[in-house]
Image (tube, rainbow, N blue to C red; front, side, top):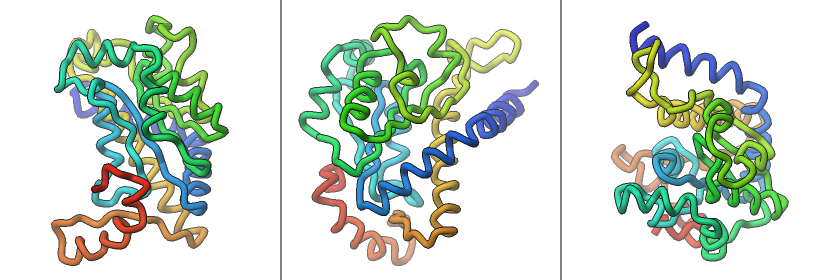
Length: 238
C-alpha cells in the first residue's frame, strides 16, 4: 500500500471511530460559543502545531485562545521542550498567567497523553467544571510510560482518538520507520470539529465567529469586529 492510501485509510477509520465523540464535542463547543465563552487550546512539542492550526486561521474560529509557554516549543530548544512537557507544575504556572473562564471549553492535544503538562491541564479544566476535550491516541497512550500516573484520555470528559500507532511512524506499512501520522491525524480531527460545528450552527441558526482570510478582498474589514470583540480576552490577537 502506498503512503497516500495509508493516510486515506487511516483518516477514514478515524472519522468513523470518532463520530459519536465529535457530536459530543460539538455540543460543548456550541454551548461555549452561544454563552460567549472561549475555546482554549493547548499542547506541547509537535502538538503545538495543532494549537497553531486552531488560532487566527482563515475559516477558523475567532473565539480560540491558545495556551502557550515558550519552553514547550521544540524550535526554542528540542531537548528542553521535552523536559518542559514532563515538568510537574508547568500547567498550573501557565493557567495562573492565563486562567480559564467559566464558559470556556478546554481542548488538549497530545498524541501520547502521558506527560504531566497535558494531563495536569486536563485535570485543572475538569476541576474548574469545564468540558475538557482530549485529542490523543489510544494505541500510543497505552504503550507509553505513565509519567503522570494517569493519562489525558482518563482525565478528559470527551476523547477524540487519533488512533495513531505507538511510535507514530506510518511508512512502510509493514514495518514503519518514517512519515509520522500524528500531525495529519490531529489536524484532521480539528477540521472535523469545524465541519460538524458549521453543520450544527446552520441547523440551529447559530452565528459562528469565523475568521476571513486577510489576503482576500474585504477580509480585514470582516475581521475588524471579531478582533475588537475578542482582543481583550485573547491577548495573543494583539
